[in-house]
Image 1 (cartoon, rainbow, N blue to C red):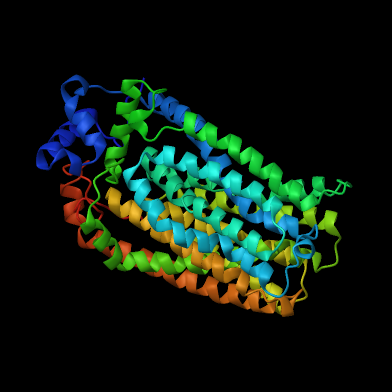
Image 2 (image 1 turned 90 degrees about the vertical axis):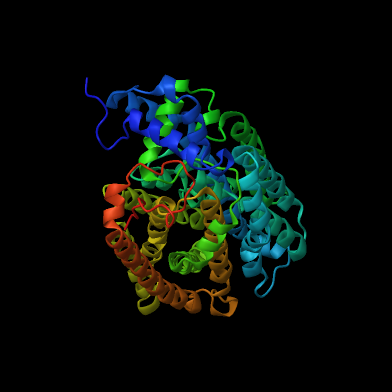
Length: 499
């Protein structure tokens, strides 16, 4: 049987590094994994495992974590995009939405996200992550069902504003959980599956099925009630079956928890620390890489905000009825999901060229947007534009592995949600009612944003590459000496960026 390969940390060295970490600083200032390893160093010292054991463990982790997080992300997408499905069943008419009111309703969740993200990020740092997340999922479902009782613009806007506030935690929480459990080369594949874009597919199926309802009860209300009820039930699944961190996973043995901690040692990003470190917040703010990613996310999310809200109206504008529009709204979700998985699997093969892959992948939706602007509008051109999700989801896997220090991670994961929300607020506003059904302003906005995203992503990759070159000697000489100290990527001289 083949023992673990050199890419995995040897147990003796990591246990020794953990003991050093605890001795080097106060226990509350280091990663919680360091404390556990240090307390059990004598018992764990010398333990080894074979590659088959590692694969078996990760399959066990995958089957527990990925399906739960996958459904959570899908429900969040469904909750937000249900407005698009409801729109083809006279939601606008029943609620007397006029002018840009539908656009503002589309942007409402992201205003809520901006308002709630600060408190949510603080709670994510101080409270058990999954327990707090489960409470938020419960609130999603309640608010989704409340939307069925809305009778005007104000009520619908408030419900969607609050919905976005409680859903603000999704991407930061998922990003944090994936970074907690998986190594850098494993994260892109999980991200692409979990943060999927099958919501438009399911929305299309739901909207198509609801189209056969002929009773007096409004079809769009059935959509909101169905999604809300299922989301409430899923909140209990999250609470009872998703662990807060590897150390609290009762379905893992002590040896398996130790293996998980050990295999995370080499990426220098840690597992979890509950001490809030203000200096890590300052570092995050003044790091130029923060702002390059922040701008890139806004640029990639402006198209997302517009297409998510107006996709069905764009397709209906091509001359299709409600049932056919619902079915034709499904392929964009498939395009986004499949392109995201393909690019993420490609990115997982290397840590050297991920930014180049992401920048190149932006060219596909850019070409789709240019075709929409210059040539007669067709379904194919619209579907081309819907590959925008692939570069975003792969960009997540880049900053996910390039940020160390728990406070810095929580801060930036939340801050990057803010940029995500801003992009999604701007997006629907670029689609003007007086430009329907062509929505020329939205198409031009997409073209400009894709070009900006390419520039920001390439600049980020170049800065990370130069940083690696500048401290190449330190990286090679200090590979494991600072494990579990809860240091940031800038503080840890052994930290190597993914480029």
